[in-house]
Image 1 (cartoon, rainbow, N blue to C red):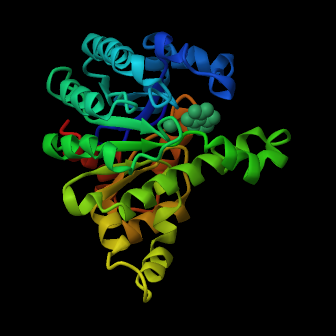
Image 2 (cartoon, rainbow, N blue to C red):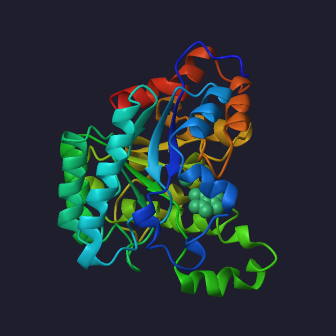
Image 3 (spheres, rainbow, N blue to C red):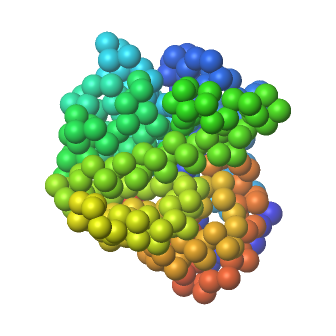
Length: 321
Ligand code: GRE
Ligand code: ZN
């Protein structure tokens, strides 16, 4: 049993699988191994026990990748509504321990915006989580801005979660090593490339000019972007580029979480670039276990006040908890 910090602990990238949605997963998305899947389908004794063992008070639940992002348009809205309704029941049964991010049927952007509004205003969800490309398209395309417009209006964040890179990217960049190192396609590198690219494209798209109060959350300590912000800013400020400050947008509109990345040097880089008010605690359970995350937080080289912001203060403000 971990010694509890003297503040609540809210973990915000904690996954589950919905049986109906997971049936649509294909190829290497379809299975994650028995022990992980047992946890993904559990909302009871096992999940709560492992939260308690690490002193985690609340999990903000979200579906695992690729969530609803690969559903065909004909069924996307109906399936996703049922997924969110079932998740709302899980939260209602245990409101002191669970909150939720909605899944959105991005194949149908108008339906996705409407479902975000329904999930927030009727189901009490805290925002939404998106997982990579929608059927081969990046989510910065104009047709998806309906979702960001609605998120800004509702004042809820959109969490950009990793998913597998486009199959062509995997084939050209990583296939040679995927057999010996299957996770290089996932958290070892592929996820990072995919998600950082989504985030950079979103900034370049100009969506933050139209929606200056849009909030985007990135996991995994910002998917390398806090480390790169100086270089990206310097490059895009050189002659011949459209005027824009990557740094201003990234540091104002983006938030990062500690999911699956328990490193003091990486955390301090985030503190120095994006600031303590934009860093939130997450584990990435059950792909990562709770005790290493909680144990790391205990010893991070920051003040108790800053630690409390990461562990729950920032989540309470941004997710209105
Ligand atoms: C996955 O979805 O399979 C996954 C994660 C996070 C880390 C590792 C992993 O979502 O395999
Ligand atoms: Zn995750």
